[in-house]
Length: 447
Image (cartoon, rainbow, N blue to C red):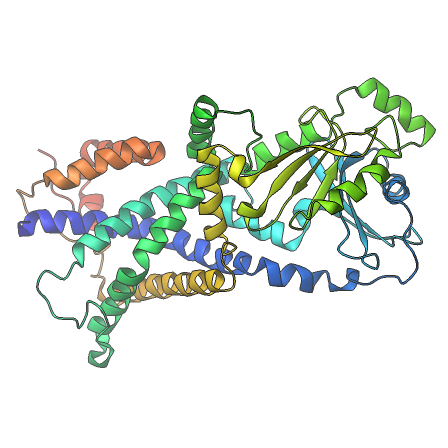
């Protein structure tokens, strides 16, 4: 590549980094916290691990007590207890909202009531994926992730060895100090973690609003069986799915049952007690949720919500006999679902713990170090009165390979494609015509 084209590529890398590095730092920090959910959640809920030594009341009585404690709700799901001495956990629904009730299974005394999305790990999850800003936040994080993919690919190309020695390529030259040490810390760390970071970004896209929606449409076209999708696309999709799960198939029947104090969402309050032994016998990976009929699932069902999605399974239950009449394991899901399931499990550090967690933590720490080194290096070397982007020669060309990369990424990542066009138009039609902006950004004058 000629020097002019190299500087042009470096310039794209510079601006992508300037925009994306704060988001990379955010994703790495929040992801690092969420990575240890299997350890943190039991620690945060340790007071509910053993709340009684007395025999527990029937599950239907526990649910009735939870419903009485939170008027205006319906049963969303009952969580299979980890032990007879642990607090009972009942999920109640109200519109698109879920409310978790903890209660003593023997005395039926309510210990705590909390909105599901107010739990610590759920807050971290939504901060990580959408900044707690809903659809707008999901689109913003998807845009940042798309530009970060471009950032990592250009960074790998720019720092490719090309005949250099190992110093500054596989290990940083920290003893030189100053700009060289900070540059090497950024570039060498990037060389080691970029491929893993690319995997994390791609495996996280199914949750994003735009890209995940397109993937869902593709899934509906290619799925060979009507299996319920195992992931949500942003909090708006999560609320919509909750609303369906909180609406019984026959609302009139449910309203009639409210008055008699029966178990909400079913015509027979003893069904939950009947299906429990059969669900336990299936040996599903915990946590296991048992749910009444709803518009989303018209039959009694149970599902594993294991962190490792490859261990999940869904059961269909007979309300009369309490028997399991259908089971869908991970291996029976459509190929696209299995591919995403493996990606999500690795992304969350759940596929082969604890090594998966250790590897992910090292990558997150590497990304944090890379971001800090880049910021320090830029701050120390930035020129007075300018942003510090590499200046372009008058006749800087556009390498065919790089143009092909932009077109390919723009097609695969629609938000990136649209933003690339917007940036190009903004630079050509406006920024190059403003002397102050042109000097600050290091642009050539418009012709």
